[in-house]
Image (tube, one colour):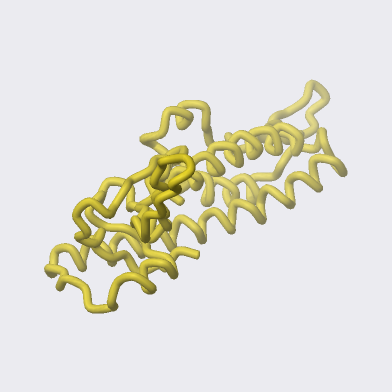
Length: 194
């Protein structure tokens, strides 16, 4: 488990290794060496102590191993760094809250697309969905897959030849497909940021 409070990557010359896995970079600390005389080989034991914050490589989110090997007395952070960390934490909390809202919408539309696949989604629901999708698109705007995402167009009322008013727009199954694309993009984004 990684803690929410970032810390400086500790100074441990020759003891730290940085390993990239996917979009994340893990900080590993050498905890010991064991020599095997039969194989004439020295095995290095390492433990993950944290994960680097993207764009702020001097900072990391620590885990329990960090607390085991380093005292809680850390290098004092400058006011500017504290401000950046607070901004990072607020943004992170906002993004996770946004993902929770999206997951609720996604779940509802998966059900509705089975019950009423061809019914048009009304204007009120479209506005509520776009209220979640807009900040999600803004959050992922720098990602290569952002160009495949779009907001849901609002439905329009049109007149038929016999004068009846009908609602035209995206159906529940269309919206469910669009939300599936967003779900994939959000999964990739959150794998990258943590």
